[in-house]
Image (cartoon, rainbow, N blue to C red; front, side):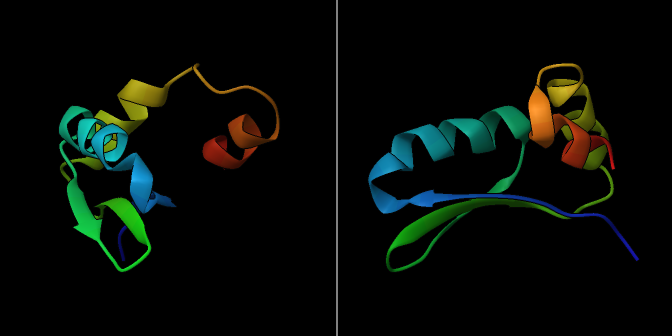
Length: 66
């Protein structure tokens, strides 16, 4: 069992998603109408945790901590 992290956005935001993929050292997957930054390797999860630590507010902060 392993944790995974994924962000999805419409296809017109490709440059932003590629940049996020580079920062988080994650895979960028392009589908017909959207693009996804996905990471499910155990080695990349600590990088994602460190990057987003104490940066989110509100409900997303609670969801992220859970």
